[in-house]
Every structure is written in C-alpha cells, then in structure tokens.
Length: 526
Image 1: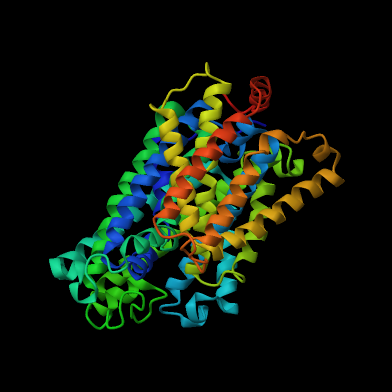
Image 2: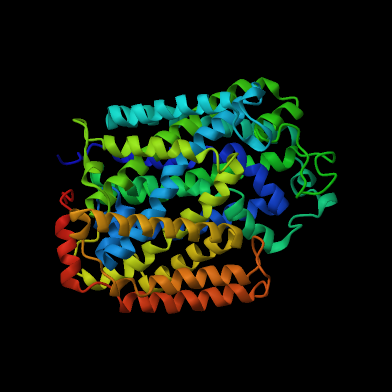
C-alpha cells in the first residue's frame, strides 16, 4: 500500500510551525538567559539565521526527492547503506525522544499546581509517570487512527500556539518594558558571558531544539500535495514566523526579571517555581489573570508538537525498514496509510526515556546535539547528488552550492561541538549501540544479509565522527580539556569540515548505484 499525498501547503506549514512552537517557548527563554544573559536575544537571531541556512539545503533535497521519511532515506542515495543507517539511527533516536520530551513539558507545567507529579528538577514521580503514559497513549492513538485527523487536530491547535505566546509576551512588555530592564547593566550588561555564552545557549539553552521542528515538513514530503511549491514555503516560513515569536518571549522574560532574581548573577537566576518558568514569571509579576491562557498553551503547544514528532519518528522507522536495515514488519500500515507497528515501537521505547533523562532540561541538552548531528548529512548529500544525478528536476535549486553546503555543514558541526564533550561522549555510546543492532540484524536475518553494505562510501564518516569527538574533548564546551583556545577551535573545525567534505565527495556512490537506489523509492510520485 502506497502512502497517500493528502497534505495541503498550508497544513504542511502548520505542521512545522506546530513542531517548532512545542515546549521550547515554555522553557527556552529561562535557560538561554541563564547561559547568555540579555545576549540570549543575539543567540536567538544566530540560531534562526543558521537554521534558515540549513533549511534551504533540506528544501532543495526534499523537493527533488519528495519521499516520506526523507531524512533517513536521502543519505542512502548519496552514500549507500552504512552511512544511511548511521544517520538514520541518530535521526530516529532524536525524533523518538521528542514526543516524551513534549509530554515531560506538559507534566512539569501541571506540577506547578499539582506538585505530586514531579520531584526536584522535573523528575517524574509514580503519579507523574502514569500521567505521562496516558498522554503518550493519546498521542500514539491519534497517529494510528488517521493522518487526516492528525493534520486537522494540529491545524486547530496551531492557531492557539501562535496566538497565546504573542499575547503573553506583549502583555509583559507593556507592563514592564524599559531599556534598562532589557539589558540589566547591574548584572553584567548585554553579554555577561561573551560569545562563549551565546554559543552555549544556542545548543544547551534549547534554541536548536526549538528550531528543529522545521524538518517536520521535510519528513512529510512524500505525503504533500505539490511539494515543489509547498516545501520551501513550509520550511523557511515556519522558521521566520517562530523566530519573531521567540524574540518577543525572550524580550518579555528579560524585561520582567528584577534585582532579586539576579542577586547571584544570570547563571544562578533565582526564580521560584523555575521548573515551570513562564508560570513562575507571571505569578511573580502579578499577572495571574494570564495563567489560564498560559496553561491552555502549555497543554496545546507540547501536545500538538508531540503529535507531529510521533508522526516523524514512526516514518523514520518506516524509512529504515524500507531501506532494509530493520525488520519488514515495521512497514505495516493501517488502511489510512499510517505505520502502526512503528508507532507502537516508538511508544514502547519512548516510555523508557523518562528515567535516564529526568526533567526537560536534561532531555533537551542531549537531544540538541543529536539533532545538530542529523543536519550534517544534508549538505554532504546535496553536493554528492548534484554530481550523481545532475539532470533530475530540482524545483528549488540553491545558488553557490559548494559555499552554501560547506557553510551548512560547518554550522551543523559547530552546533554539535557547542553541546560539549559530556554530551558528545554519550552520543558515541548511542552510535555504538546502533551499529551493534544493525550488524546483529544482518547476522540473524536473511533479509538483513541481503542488504549490501557500502563500505567504501563510508570512508569519510569515521574520520568525521572520531575527529568531532576529539575536537570536543580538547575544546571549550561541556567539561572538556580546554586545550584548544576559544576562537582557534572555530578555525580548526572550519578546516576540518572542508577536508571531510572533500573526502565525502571522493567516496560518494557511483552514479549507477545511486540510480538503482532511486528506483527503490517507490513512493515517489513526481
């Protein structure tokens, strides 16, 4: 059964807007302020611009190859099975964990009034875990029932998600805005932690996490009506719309902070009830009349994003099965065209995420680095496919491709690096686990053994992963050794990325192999 093209351009835009306006708007203003102070506004601008640069790469790829689960399937076309599996594994891990992260956000905000739901720092109690399970079941059931109702529900919730944060931000700004309140000169001025704090805020403060929602449109490319027109509008438009909202919220949060909050500096921002930061802010500012509106948003925002991320993660798992990396049973779909087995697997694994990553902040810190790493394959695939399939129709085509691709690859690598050695080391363990699963499936399954491994085409990948790990260990973020001076590390990464890109182009798939893999993407309808 073929997956149907049923999503309109507006619905595709709303799917990405909804994914971006998940739980990030409820938490990120607080955490970015801790890391960068008032310069958090600069961090949002940098995060938005860099996301747009990367998003343009996805816009070209996904209009040329509009397939469901594109992030897991396009790498197969450029560099074959092994490279495709590694990035598919990272992408699936990140998407699978996103729905639990959004559910965690809902439970944390409910705990502002029902403290029995969480422990300190947001870890769930038994009651909280039961509540999270029920929410995860609802999200999975809607995804299983119908894509049509999923999109209808998402469109309705997205209107609320757009309106509520704007009302809250503007109300706070009207009541408290003064230039001095925005920059807080008594607490170190505009940028108390310099560029290091700004870059740390982009990854660890939740900015990367927030903007990753633009990829939702890319994942649904195979189900979009007129993807050539709809995809660029959805991908770029969603980032621009949401950047404006995030800037308003950040300015409102900074403006509402007072001397008591900043008595010990931005790193030790003192806010009572900080596990639900916007609720705590409204209560502190005596704007409690806005709390009911906030809580509508605190439920609608994360749950709508959870719906879309559940959709993405199931389609990523579906794509890996289509590529031959995982059992064929994961391709089973309902009469409505939804991958039911993949949804069930994601629910089961997602429930395991709450214990090892207690609290929204810990979940997001790990996820941000994973998601940054998933961006890295797109510019590599873009350059390779320009050479492998030069004559394929590209409705959206980037200019200055080598420069654009290198810049996007450099940005994606920097974002991973900014997450720090502590996070990068954990990702290495997750990658090893994925490779064990991949080769284990090959060992025990005839279907797995029939999947050819493109060893040579993965030659560039291992130096990239090992090099990034080494630079992170020697660098300046996240409990690293601080051997590479700040600034020099950026130059080293720039040169490193250029060398890796040349190596990746040298070891791309032969054109005939790429054409063979393209013919296996039977869902492409043109």
